[in-house]
Image (cartoon, rainbow, N blue to C red; front, side, top):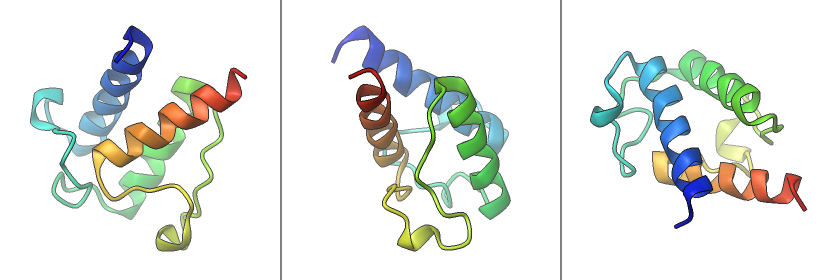
Length: 91
């Protein structure tokens, strides 16, 4: 894993931890947003913060997250999705 991937992971964890009012050390890659106590509004705020932090557009439907092509099932899947979006943006 290169330093940019570590940086993405750490920034995403920081954003999610802030939404969950937790320490970043309390957020694991296997955590679900539900585990962390993040509700649908917190999820939307997290997505906005992530878009702003990485200057990307997340293909996410707040009204039907289960139909979204962006996987929000775990912190790990969110990080992987953002890494992919960032990589696509820089090609």
